[in-house]
Image (cartoon, rainbow, N blue to C red; front, side, top):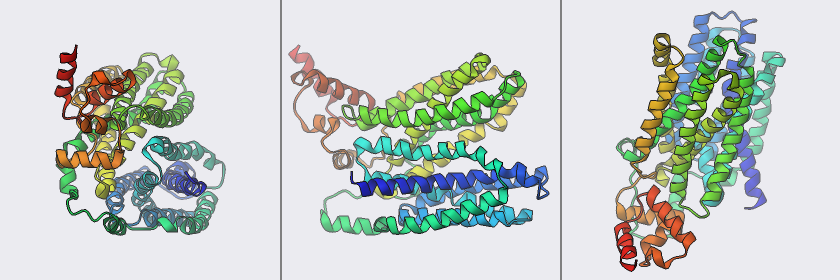
Length: 461
């Protein structure tokens, strides 16, 4: 890839980092803000709840908008709005002023993640997409690591100077990314001019298609358990350690470090594995493996509290690694014309896992105690393995013919297309290729002549 592409990628990573940083900053600074502005517990509850609600809604709205409008324009709108809200918070003296700023901060967060992933997907090939996607996702982890340092300064100055700095940075981004400031509609028109094929199958779109897709619900359901686990590790584990007379500080540090390692490692492993194995098959195996391993790690925290630092590192690595892989799958689960909407919809459904880790889990803990987590993790582990064994496709489909055409277009002459197009049987291929094909056949349902291959192999034996 050219140096220019890498430079644009760095800018997008910083923009995404800024989105996350500005979203978390007011929450982090609330203890300092309370010292200057009188805020009751109910006031704080209103601020946090409205912020979280509009954050969830905003991700869905901007995900849909990314399929219709320029990704660069959405990124810059989100960045400028975040910076302006930060400056507004610096001059806030009343609850209603803070409420407006935090509501705007919440709703524009969706303008960061989905457009950024779609830009990265357009810049890099499938062989490097996993690594670059993971680097982008690390922006969220770095934002969390830097938040505590903001408390060392006067909160109004932090909000003012960071906001003003990002406004200036947005000007640089506008000129650096302006050649990518193209709407999806214009891109489709250019593609039709280059390839005017009337027989090319048209892909369906719209929210109705997404809601009726088994692929989307399958991904969302398994991803839901990962989001639930993140909430458990960030809230309930710390309360458990406090009740156990153990400081949660060491756990928090090792959890964040493990998250950084897990996010990067998952992307690198996927890129290395996809050089020999099918892309979807590799992502499925790694995502399910990470999801299962995070449950074992979390169970270790509640069973061996004195080793919470070690299990905290493992939990952070597998939780964040699992989130990274499932987000990667979601970013390419839909057709090209609705990828943003699909990614946002999956995140929207999966976020209900955080709700399950709230009041319902609090009730179970009050009745059965902390050991209920061991039973919950065991049941969820079985559910994940059973659901994953169905091997539902990881990409939306409109029929076998359209599926084969889509795979050929997006994945080139990979393992799966080789098997479909070829009349060879497995015994006539070398060992390495045969293993790759068997792996793809097991983990996906892209291959039609599986029975024919087995029958021909048995006849030769």
